[in-house]
Image (cartoon, rainbow, N blue to C red):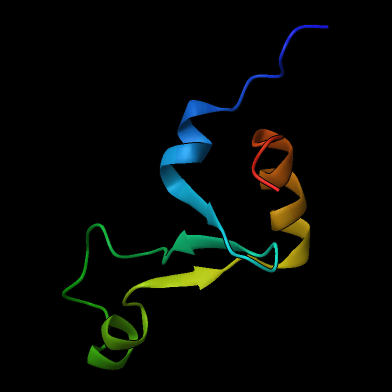
Length: 66
């Protein structure tokens, strides 16, 4: 049986924590930042954990990262 392949785009964008949650970068920070509030920009720093529905999809992209 051949090895399953990991999606290259997923391994660059997501990280799995020790408890199995998926970390991803915050969305909405690439452009049109002038109209965003300072509070939005401040709260969107760093990474966030994905919701269960999205995490299930991403885990399918990375079969060996569990």
